[in-house]
Image 1 (cartoon, helix red, strand yellow):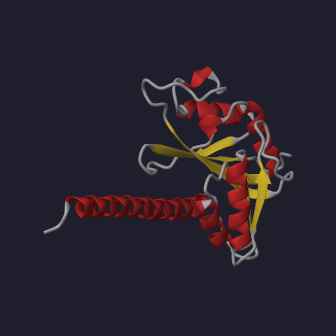
Image 2 (spheres, one colour; image 1 turned 180 degrees about the vertical axis):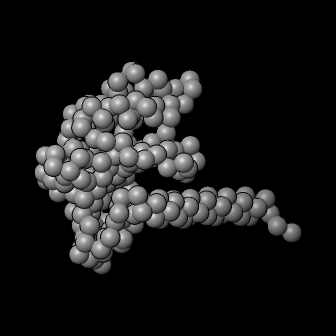
Length: 216
């Protein structure tokens, strides 16, 4: 006969094992989505061995890693974050890389802090709707790209009944970014909207912009 005490301990172990399994599964799903998004971005942004690219607001760095694999050892991936803890995690991630082609940069509220005209392309995912000074950040993005360089912004439409994040312009209409407003703001910074893929993951959308050739 199994005592109630042993049953309670066993049940706790089962619950813990299920919770850990869920975390591992979520991490795997996140990595799988990073690789899928990187495949799409590689096509949209013309990534190839030797390309220099940047991710703005890289989070846990999964998409940065996927990009680094695609541009290869002769390429370079700049990856930025505002949060000190995330920044430290990215630095650890870059240090552990077998191929040292990731450069970690502390981002700013109103600037990428990337070198001027350093990148063939720049991308951000679920970041734009958090920008508190979008006009200044857009101008900085423009300066960070080489003439003819490409910018991909992945975001989602505002969700009904939500509020914009703290400090973000109120014209977003909720937590998210209206697609046309995104195009208008980046066009005002000098970008040309090139394409909007018909499908992205879940409720997300993607818009690809270009810095006109000859513009500095």
